[in-house]
Length: 122
Image (cartoon, rainbow, N blue to C red; front, side):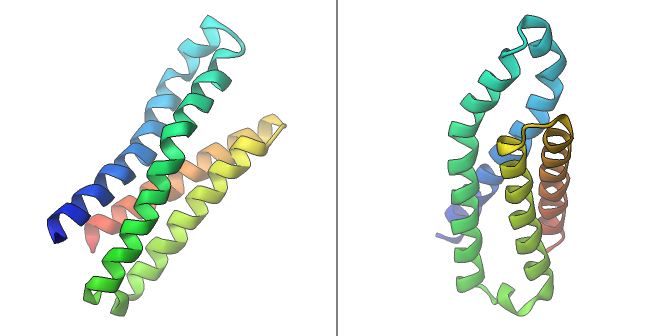
């Protein structure tokens, strides 16, 4: 059960983080296709990304409850980074200015990468 829980957690985190990286790479091409293409693709991605984010949160909390990880302060930092990544993504979604889109998207990815890195260290 431990292996399955960890597999589901890493898979969900990979969708959240990896999808952001893929979208960032596709953005120039999408803009060439149509001014609306980036938004449409992002909305489609969100239908997969947000459930993955939720699954990563649930399995992360599950990990904390069944291991001694709760005694490590690094997990509190990781949890904060995950929350900040979600907040950045939410700002990116609701933002209307180019600055809000840029800051939200960049912060979401950077916090997600930091959380993933910290997870591998733990």
